[in-house]
Image (tube, rainbow over all chains, first blue to last red; front, side, top):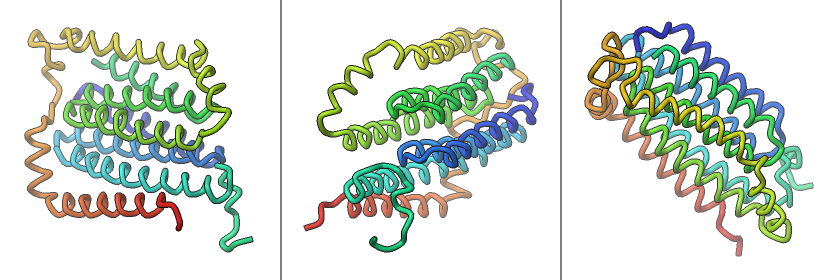
Length: 103
Length: 168
């Protein structure tokens, strides 16, 4: 859309990315951290779409499709890890896994 | 059309803020669905209808179903029934419903051709990059990337299967 200034789209993407980053830093539950990572990925996709719309190129949308593939792979492995984590530690608090070796 | 962008963007920011501040996983996931839907509307307004459809199908559809399955697998046991009752309370779904209703009103407005040319398409000044260009670019210039993405998805599939297998 030519009549939305590019800056506004990028500002929206930046706000969403910052909200996702805040979520990763603040929350301690694995499910919320994964959801926040999804928000950050889709905010990056929004930046690509805004740039693609600004120059009228298809490349931005192609990048969003790759981001979708990465997000799908990431969330499937991440949720599998969450199930494993729950079985191992009995909780979803990520601070329970603050050691590299068995306690 | 500008107004549509600002409303959808505002809904996206509000629902994303609600995602990271909710204590209850299901409440957060409901707001996350609304956030993805509003982003899809932003994509549509920006002249990227193909990616908007993909956003609804893959993010708001497939990935959210994956999240819901994980939450349900993780919440086995006696607290499940109390949680079920909690989910049916008005407080759980009224906020996402209001935000989704705003998006629906906007979608109806856009689909009815409001704020656009007479043809019902987005305003004539805009550049719409349709599925045809995206497909030609995806399977032309970026063919190697498609192959890499398929390997990545296969690795994700194998990894998820290996990680969730019961140890014998």
